[in-house]
Image (cartoon, rainbow over all chains, first blue to last red; front, side, top):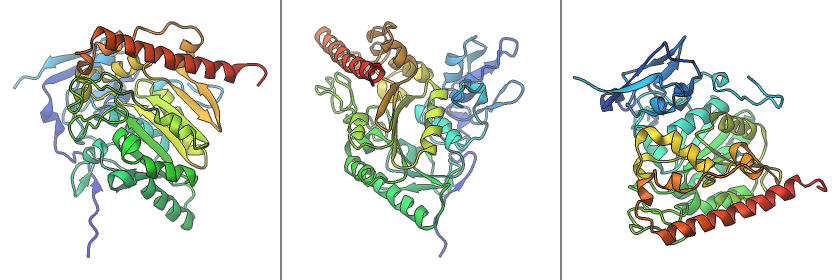
Length: 81
Length: 310
């Protein structure tokens, strides 16, 4: 008998980006790379490259990153489509 | 940047490893996943999570997938500490010394339902870390009152405001004389990371409590999670300390308050939350009075710990 084990999967609940109503967008010129958006993202959707990279496939649009940015480099705009 | 005690003091130095994978089932703006991400960065891959019924059991997502990249044991509501005792014994028999069993339970599963199992495990000196993320209510089942709900707060079962005071689980745990107890919150990730790291290195029972402001439960905007957690510390509604082998030390902003910095008025924190919207003048006065009383106690503890004759 096979044991019922769950395996770690990215997107275990599907593409959670579809939940989003407000879309964060980063202004690279303002960004000071303090990485507060990265550490406070509840969805691990911001990764670290030269600048923060937002994964729109999984970002739920909560706005914590925009609220915590000390220089207001992230702006929340309504999702269009 | 690393301080002279070997503690990480800048966010950019926190490890890049992610153990909470994208696309989990948490509400937008959830404090639990922020806390768990930081905690698992400190604990590393060699961790076994024991999770009772709580929000985190839902965040994991459904069979056959899971959103956490560490082994998890899901267990009944009241049995998390007992289950972790079993895991710890098994690891001891297998001589796996570098694997840490960690309970990740909510305040319902710690303050109310899991308290006797927790007390038993602490008394036996089980080699594990118990983390209670405290959102001050049963959020998962739809916002019911728990032992951690503060005086005056609205929940679906106390809809005119809770009439009783919350209990202090960290102080109950302190009475078990375990080697490490700490309180933390998500607004100070370096502090939380260092406390987790410190707990990992100590042998025996360790207890960490994390304040997790819940946007749908506390009735505030989902983007304000971290701000709310920071305000809780700045107004004195939450306190940061650690107790190592019975010696109490306050940290961060709470220490600065005890050194003479003015506490922000607690109304600032209360009025941001819809659950305190109905508060009357006399109830607000009572909350303030209870808070002042609590801080008088902390002040006494602080001065006795720092007095020169000790």
